[in-house]
Length: 265
Image 1 (spheres, rainbow, N blue to C red):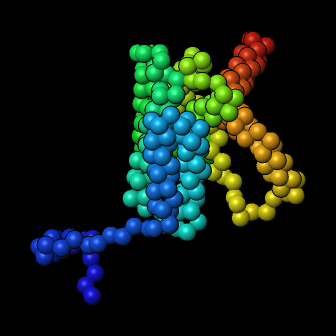
Image 2 (spheres, rainbow, N blue to C red):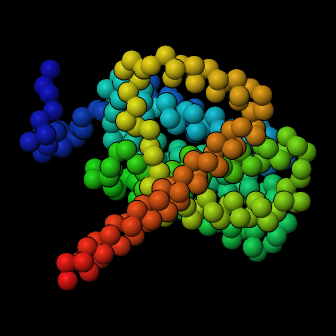
Image 3 (cartoon, rainbow, N blue to C red):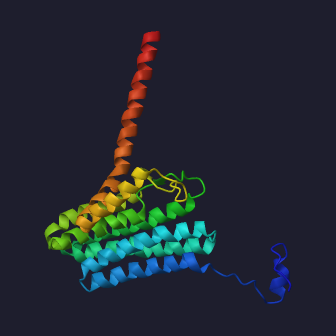
């Protein structure tokens, strides 16, 4: 059978044929499941079932973390998969959280409400576009700006916690507004957030690590909404803490350097 030669594409075009390109099923199956979870969240928010909407976003976050790792472990990365994953993320972590936040709480604020929702949605789109264009040059240990799944989890966690304590969105609309705007602006910031990509799952770990993992699951089972939301808040603030720590460190180095120059003079 004659094979397609990339150096001689005109031969195929003259025959009226194009080479068929397949897609890898396994990683794209996880991406499709994540897209479904994001769409499910939108539908549940429109039906007023906000707890299901929040859980849908969290499920999409888990699936988004799996599809990339599955693709790397099975060596099934592809340009199609990367583009499909980005579009799925825009639905699950851009449109869905913005709509959930708006329908749950922000719509009672009128213009301020939909502006906050749009800030978040636009921030997610810009964050994904920047990530796609800087993948080759970025430090893989850190994300530039709050990752869109973490930003979405921040909003979903807030909705889940308030629903669990039977607090309506209208009663905490300013809190919801602040969290939504904070998440949207954090995504387009230049702050660094740890990516966890340097963790090797096939490497042996100390026994105490497994003990810590078991205790984490026990702690989550006590109060899943509150514990998970606290974790999301801590991660969202970690970039600001790291920035402040590096700022103080640089000021200390600059002060020490200027002091040395004064002594030598």
